[in-house]
Image (cartoon, rainbow, N blue to C red):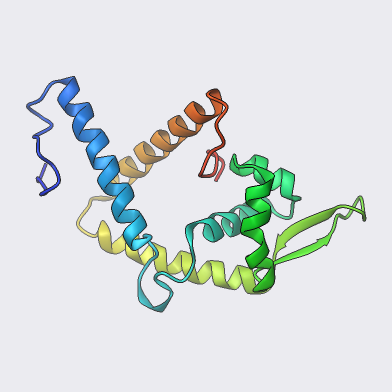
Length: 174
């Protein structure tokens, strides 16, 4: 395993404590770098969509139209946060508010055609970035990394849920 300037220990020679210290450090470095670059992608759309917008649009795309409460529950965040994050998406035409098909008094949020197009642009740019960052990885390494990162995120979500904390990120269904 190659070392980086941020990695001060060789994980193959340290005990469990050292391994966990290295793990927490690498997660902190990853979080910092991800926020700095926003892992936004490449090209002109690189940093043009913030994390909250991307996650909300992605969730609406995958799960379809839903109300604020359902969207908040699906993402593991509170309704006021969703309301605040969705407002600019509605204002810019990426999300539209429509009447609930079964209860005309209720409002549902759904991805607009413009939102769908914009989401696909950003996804494509982010896919390209992931391809570049892992270009020298074997397909099995990409799969293993994805599997382990997904498992790690699920563990974080479960821990937050068990402590009654709202999640800052979507729940495992994202």
